[in-house]
Image (tube, rainbow, N blue to C red; front, side, top):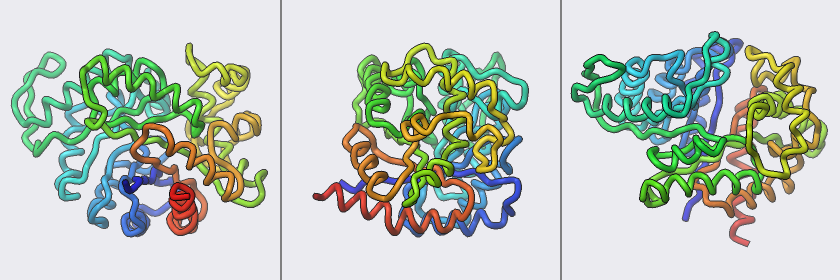
Length: 337
């Protein structure tokens, strides 16, 4: 069976929106199956402008917000914008939803609770029917609805992973590019599927990973360090995690104190040196080609359907060409051996 790959990226404030079309076209033509755009209104250019440009520049790749939330955008606004994306793309839109983090905290809000997310998913389902429905105590109807657009839930912790298994078309599996960590997470998705009596084939599990390939390990780790710090900050409030990761808790606390939202994934972020090399290696893929290919091969042994690479800033066209022309072929060759 052909393995599926995706790309996740945001449009930097320093990057002309006009370049979005060119890069999206290259991603489409390189054979990637999904294209996710970061929704962070303070640190990135507008996600819907970017996705609509991508929709008009591509022909086959799925396109979605990776991910939006219920706090900074009202569900009726999100549903209408996603329906427009679906029309422009010829039925290739997907809706990525999460509890909210950088976009929500940066606007002074609080991430949605589990019950709110469940209600939000149900609300989107009803809106996408195009029929009148009750939403937040108001009778509404989405006039532009065309079909049930697939809903992916960004999840990393047990309760949200179970919810994804119970009710979603897909899950954006976030947390770490580590086989042991991912295996621990997948168990909760399977619990959700079982509780709802759903077949595993009813959902797509899309694992998001961050990777930097280079012969010099120190340079590769520096490349992913800002992302690793942002991830460490999200781990700080976790009550449960794989036992092997408990040793990193002091780093999570330091990252939570030092993390700067607007810098987020910037390679020049001031917070990028907070976490250790050990944590950076564990949460992301960094090193020479053989090291990264071996980790990817081990991840493909898990129950996942797609691996989506976060396309880091700085020479994105070159990074994309290396991914599609060198890294992925090497992974596929290793899988056949």
